Length: 515
Ligand SMILES: Cc1cc2nc3c(=O)[nH]c(=O)nc-3n(C[C@H](O)[C@H](O)[C@H](O)COP(=O)(O)OP(=O)(O)OC[C@H]3O[C@@H](n4cnc5c(N)ncnc54)[C@H](O)[C@@H]3O)c2cc1C
Image 1 (tube, rainbow, N blue to C red):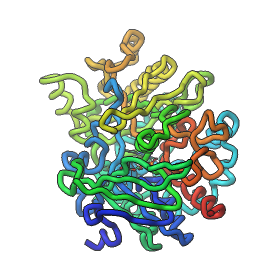
Image 2: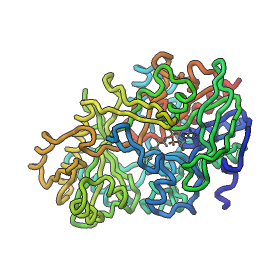
Image 3: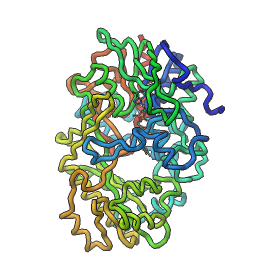
Image 4: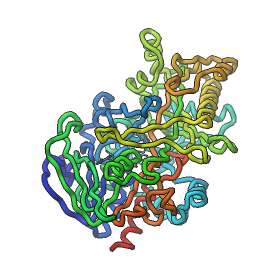
């Protein structure tokens, strides 16, 4: 019960609230910003559509965790269903479900943002002091090779065996006993996610964090947001049903931190759909393999993501790639394995002996990679479309080839692709299959857990939604956006630490120029 102190269930509220700053969304961006503004003396309300869960709710069960913690119970996907999208929906946002990998933004990405997108006030020099502070608060530290599980160790060994660099990752954990269940909410509060760090910090400075409160739209009058109009969601059944309760929040300033799908859809529902709103959505599209080893791998135990290789991040004119692992629990394994009946059963029977490795395409760095779109359905719910261009299919094919090669080099008996039907590789001689394999929507499994862009920052109002100095909307004077939606491209690394850094920096800039 004590873990719940200070958090407010929307079901206990009705009518109207007022504050100085209303932040929509309590994930990586919203939580850090809330803590910074509250510490600066601002009266903050955070509105979150998901429920508030604590370690007592995390039972290491996929059937409970997916409806509890993920958008659309984990079944979110692009319009043509060809890309599965994992995104969080809870107090703490995607950080409650994420796998803890923490990277600062590569300097080359920030340089590109400055050069091509007019993002001039966001260099490494501005962000470094914030990252220093955040890394302390979230106990971000590099894991040793000895602490990695076998799934990750095989990625490391396989990379080395084919001549590619690989390193252990930095993780935001404290006293982690490496259960492997990060994706289902940490049962011992080892993961330093927003629900146990920056949101309690914000509450300690007087912020109110309201769960099960979905912002339907902002009411905009004469270039100014007057209020946020909200629907209170049911406290049963993981909060998908609407209640008749409505809430209106009035504030001097509003911040959208609803994530790279939620934020553009709120803008559209609020009549702020002009320009590039809902365009330039980047996903780090992911392709994966499962590889069978004689000795057990147990891909469901241990720190889920503790090795990464960026050896292919810069491939000249081609789309870059980076490689990591994915934890493989029974449900995720069943969904991501091809085939039906006996064929599917045969793969699932091998689960303890399977390694799962992924290659992520670094999208958005070529002018032809315009990314995906976010629009809204007639119901108001978001709809993501992401037609994969040929350049990215080429990268995914190369990523797959590399994953197969490194697993064979690490001693795998065989490697399966995510094609339908799956392709099987037992030696390098089998790689020729990739030349004729279909790389097309719904012919090979593609995923994303890194949703970025859709309301990007920049200096040109015709090509961006917010200015980069303080993330203020170009034409709505009291509206800011602080989350992954403001990225002009993807990153080439996992996004959480970039969002934390930007959120804290923007908190300071908003305070300095407060009117
Ligand atoms: C399974 C998984 C593993 C991942 N692993 C890693 C990792 O290891 N390292 C890493 O760096 N990144 C990882 N990520 C991604 C990372 O967590 C996200 O990029 C980051 O949390 C995004 O921050 P955000 O503030 O943009 O949005 P989020 O953290 O997603 O927060 C947005 C919040 O807004 C809420 N919201 C949306 N619409 C509304 C509305 N209308 N009203 C009220 N609230 C609303 C949502 O419910 C959500 O809680 C992972 C993500 C997932 C899902």
